[in-house]
Amino acid sequence: MAIPEPEVIGGARYSIGTPSWAEGTETFELSAADGAFDEAIEELEATIDTTGLTVGRYTVFVESADAEGNYGVPTAVFLDVLEAPAANATVFDGNAEVDRSVGGSGSDVLYGRGGDDVLAGGQGDDLLIGGDGDDLLRGDHNTSSSGGRQGGDDVIYGGRGSDRISGKGGDDKLYGDAGDDVLYGDAGDDLLWGGAGRDRLDGGRGSDIFAIGVGGGTDSIRGFEVGTDSIGLVGTLSFGQLSITQDRNNTAIGYGDNIFAVLHQVSASALSESAFVPV
Image 1 (cartoon, rainbow, N blue to C red):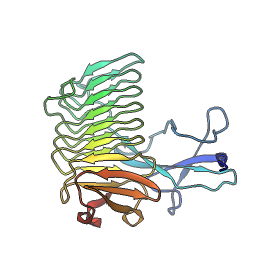
Image 2 (cartoon, rainbow, N blue to C red; image 1 turned 60 degrees about the vertical axis):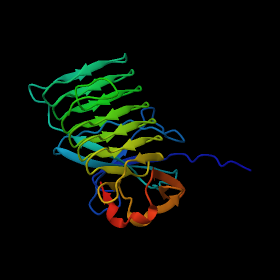
Image 3 (tube, rainbow, N blue to C red; image 1 turned 90 degrees about the vertical axis):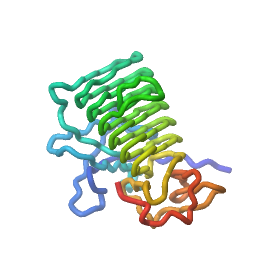
Image 4 (cartoon, rainbow, N blue to C red; image 1 turned 45 degrees about the vertical axis):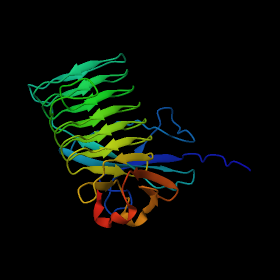
């Protein structure tokens, strides 16, 4: 059997808020640092100027084109624009070594960068970014993998690596990013998005949203409660595009040849369109 050669990437672009084909959407070209894109891109790092964007969550649609300039299906990622840290906030910027930092009562910003970091936000509405490495990230004061106290409404990004992320109390937004991550929402109405990799998601108490979309791996979702929790559709993904099938005691949700998520101990017949929401 002949194996086809990978297609050359002729260009790449992104848009914020709406996909490129929506009327009035402004697109921005991406350029490679060495002047040419590789034949295949598994990870993409880009810096986006957020000047003019108000505080809130945006969806960024990233597309690549073939040598003839034909663009494919976009991959959607989240972009959170947050307020500047207050005067009483802890701002921690780590390095390539193993970092350990605990925030205080304010809305803190903790960035681990490289290394297997341990970051705990404290009581405020915190932003935690693990960066590279296998990180332990928590929204409360505790720096161990169990126990702890209630935190605030936190935004936590795992970055590259196999991370363990716990929101603890509050309405948290948890993003695993690249790697095989474990995400626990704990108490509160949380958003969990595993990103690339085979992730394990557990919302805990509250009405949680488990996000699925193009660019993510096959996630294992546990503790999903029909009628309480929801499946979030990232980007242009719609309910009509999905396949929902029973797999023994579990439900597999996919699109084409891709399985986005497996809901453990959930019956496929119990899932209606009302269980799916755009994010």
